[in-house]
Each structure stands twice: as structure tokens, then as C-alpha cells.
Amino acid sequence: MNDCIFCKIIAGEIPSKKLYEDEQCLAFYDIEPLAPKHFLVIPKVHFASAAEVTPENSAVIAHIFEVIARLAAQEGLDGFRVVTNCGPIAGQTVPHIHFHVLSGRQLGSFN
Ligand code: AMP
Ligand code: ZN
View 1 (cartoon, rainbow, N blue to C red):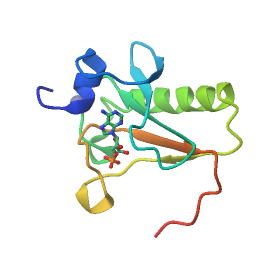
View 2 (view 1 turned 120 degrees about the horizontal axis):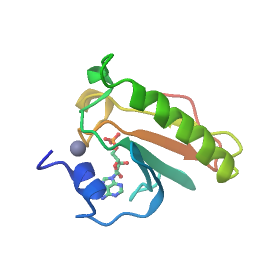
View 3 (view 1 turned 30 degrees about the horizontal axis):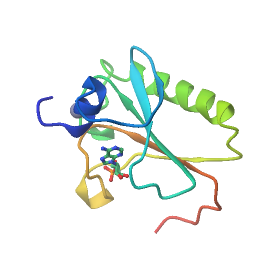
View 4 (view 1 turned 60 degrees about the vertical axis):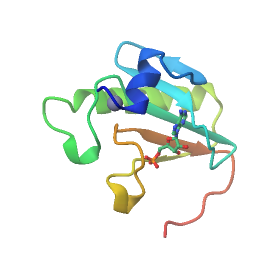
């Protein structure tokens, strides 16, 4: 998508601190980490959010969760949280679906 910051990261037009990449997804560190370990995992195909998951695109979501499990083990994460914000009211600021992986400190309850 032309104006999407995460599509630009995938295309290499904006630099990122890459953690993992394959043909379907990319994992990179969040530029404003909210925990000692905070990375994002995004599909290479553009769609906005969890509200747009369909039978046609859901396979990449399953793949991303496999990748998250692998990266958590690789990074030695002792527990982690996976978050996907959906829409501005939930705090989504980048409209390309992404999964935050947060770890390295005690995480509080939601509010
Ligand atoms: P959300 O608010 O759930 O849409 O999450 C978007 C996340 O993307 C925020 O945590 C931002 O800090 C992060 N972010 C925005 N731009 C970049 C970038 N260029 N590189 C890495 N992370 C970014
Ligand atoms: Zn995009």
C-alpha cells in the first residue's frame, strides 16, 4: 500500500531493526519500546487490522503465531504478551495489522 509506513519498512524504504523475516512476515523492534523486549510482527500482505481477517488471509495470522512462539524461545523470553490494537479507539496508530510482543518486565493488567 502506497502510504503505509509498515509496507515501506517491508520494502526497505524505511530502515528497521530487523529480528526475523521470511516470505510471509517480518519481525522488527518497536521504535518506542514499552518493555525491555518489544518487537512487532507484521504480515507482508497489507490489511488494516484484526477486523479485516477473512478465510482468504487468515493463514498468515496462524503463521505469525508460529513465528512468535519460535522467536520467544530464541530470545529466551520468560513469558510475554501479544497485543494487536484494532482501530483508533483501541490505540491503533498504524493501519497495517501488527502484533506487539512485549516481555522483560512484569506487565500490569489491562485498562
Ligand atoms: P499501534 O499503536 O498498536 O498501531 O502500534 C504501532 C507501533 O508501531 C507503535 O508501538 C510505534 O512505536 C511503532 N512504530 C511506528 N513507526 C515505527 C518504525 N518506523 N519502526 C518501528 N516501530 C514503529
Ligand atoms: Zn501496509
